[in-house]
Length: 352
Image (cartoon, rainbow, N blue to C red; front, side):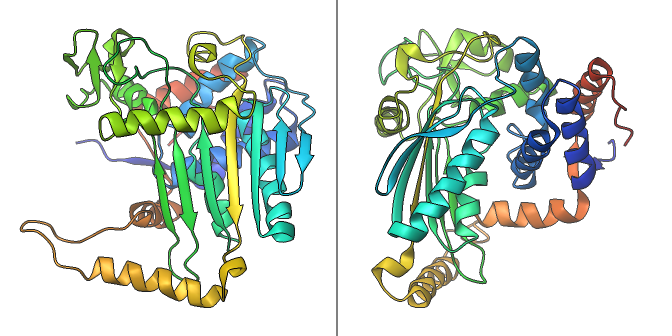
């Protein structure tokens, strides 16, 4: 068995930034995007970090991204704001949205910040984590960048994976953090399986006759299944309305498949909600209640064969600690893909 190869956090960020700069992304923007991309890898969201670099570069070269954007507040009223991303790289748009949310939650105790004309921005957890690290509750919703799910009982692809993430601070303890797609698997996992030549579980996708698809290279022939059956479908619809329709962003038939159309404006819609716990009582007492619930869950009785009860965010916290120490694991397939990018960009390849 081949020994796992690791890329240090600093080297990963530097590689991404150099590749972006080689494609006319301003250096300051390239560094922000690189840091946020690597944060996806740090928590184990491998389909949203380094893996996405080739696709981002392809989109940049095709003219599908504005590299000199005017990311701005288009509308603002009280504790709400709508960000116009001006078709910038998605990480820059969401970085701005979080900055605005932090300003507003400090002033109003709660805020709702929507955005449109953005692009794919990596793992949802990256952005709610930034809020929880400052002691706020963070909620994120987005319309995915391609429709991969049919309505419950249907076959027309009208919905995306439409993720939702929620982060709750827990003081000195690990934050409680949920980051899920409304489909059984995020499409990034399908793409990863295809890159590695692996099969998919039979509950990820079905074809137009309702039969399971296990070959990720056949993913275009079918639909991702929603979590919890019709409930996941319903959740995807509501997130589409709150992150897409409300923000005058693409949703439903208006969604652009960024995997197929690298030159078109996706008008990606996203929403960040921030809440200051101190608005509802003593903040430390709230933290204590969060910790008490986590402790109760962790110490509760298990079914036969179950080693431990886990809480949302626990796995990501362990993964982050491990990868901060070891670096990001790089598969041979990913290394080949990244070094192809390096050759195209005229930068040094990775030697690990």
